[in-house]
Length: 360
Length: 245
Image (cartoon, rainbow over all chains, first blue to last red):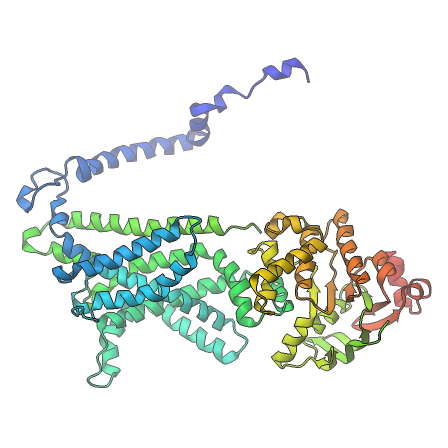
C-alpha cells in the first residue's frame, strides 16, 4: 500500500455532530424544510405545556382557593387521591388492597431480577395461590369484613379488571386457537363460531349484555355479581382476539417441527406444550402485548355499566361542586398513569423477546 | 445375519388426491439390514419411509413394524414411533432448545427417564457424533453438518431399533456431507437397521445390503449394490444411473 493512501481519511463533513445532522436532518431541501417545521412545532408546543404542568402549577394546598397560579391545579388530584386510587373502598380496610399490591410487587420484582433460583415456584405462587389471596383479601372472608364490589373503584378496579382479563384470556385464547385448527370438525367449528361472535361484537355491547340482559335470562333470585359478569365479558372478548393472534403464530410454524416432534414420539399435547407453543407464542409476543394493552385501555368502558374505574372516577370527582372546572388536570393525570402501565407492558415485551431469542 | 423380520409392507398403496404416489409396495426388511432407496424426485421414496412411522397414512395394504401393525389406533402409532427414529432433510431441530435439550426432550417426556439420566445419555450420543462440545449451543449457532449430526443424536437418544433417513445430506454444503455420512457408516457398522433415501451412491455401495430403485410410486428394482450398479435390468434404472453417476 502506498503512503499516499494513508493520508486520505474519510471526508470530515461526514463525521461528528455536523455529519450526523447533515445526514439525518438536512440531507436535501425538503428534509431541511421538514426539520425546520418540526423544530418550530416543538417550540410552539413544549414551553407552554411545561409551564402548565410544572413551572406555573400549584402543588401545595387543600382547597381550590389555593390554586392561585395560572398553571395546573394538582391539588385537585392530591385531595382526591384516595377516591382515584381505591374508589369507595372503606378507608379502614385499605390496608388489604395495599397488602395485595405489596405481594404482587415483591414477587414481580423477584421474577424480573435475572438469575435467581426458584423462579418457577414464585411464578406458580403468583398463578395459583395469589389469586386466592386476592379474592379473600379484597372481597372478604376468613374473618375479614366483606366489602361489596359496588364499593370497588378507581385504579384498583381498573387493575382488577385488566389483570383478570389478561391473565385468564391468554390460556383461553390459546385453547381456542388450538381448537380452531383441530382436525375434529365439531371442535373446530365450535371454536370458530365462538371466536367470530365475540370478535364481531363491540366490547361496549358485551358489557351492556353482561350487565342488563344477562340477569333477565337467569332464574329469579339468582344474582351474579355485576363485576364478575363484566370480568367474564372482558375475558372472553380478549380471549377471542388473542386466539386469532396465537393462530397466526401457529400457522407460521414450519411443518418440520410438527413432524420432528411426532417422529420422536411426542403426543399431541406434549408436542404443543413443549415444541410448538413455546416457539409460536414467542413469535407473536408483540401482538399479544398489543392485545393486552388494548384490553387495559378498554377497561375504561365499564363506566357504561356503572362501574367506576380509574378514568370513570376521575370524571366523577370532577363533577364534585368543590372541584368543578379541573377536568384538564384529571385527564392529563389519567393519561400519564395509563401511559406508565402501557409502556411498562411494552418494555417488558421487548425484554422478553430479547431474552427468548435463540436465533433461527 | 439373523433373519428377524423388522418391517413388512404388503400391497401398500397411497394416493395424494388423484396422484398414485405408492403403487403396490411390497417390502421385507430384516434386523440389521441397510436399505438404500433412490429414484427420481416425485417417485414416492420419501413417502414410503414416512409411511413407516405414520407421518403419512397409507390407504391400502398392511405395514407391520416389529410385529405391530400400523392402524389408526394411536397406541400402535405411539409404539412404532418409539421404535423408529427419523432424520430429516432439513434437520428439524427444535430451535428454541439447546442441542442437549433437543436430545433429552423425548427421553424425558416419552420414555419418562429422570432428567439427569436423560441428559447423561444425550451427552453420550452427542459424543458419538462428535459434537458434545456444542451441547449447550442453540441449533442456529451450528453449521449444517453439525445440526444434522445433532439430529441423528436426537433420534438415537430414543434408542430406536430402526432408523429412517430422508435425504439426510441433500440440504448440506458439499464439504459437510462427509461428516454426516461418516456418522451413518458408523451407525451401520454397529448393526442398526437402516432405511436411507439418498443419492449418495458411494454410501450406497459401501453400506447397503440392498438398493431399491423407485419410479412413479413403484419399486422398479431391488438388488444388492454390485448387481444394481453392474447389471441393472430395467431401462428406467439404467437411465437414472446414467444421469447421476
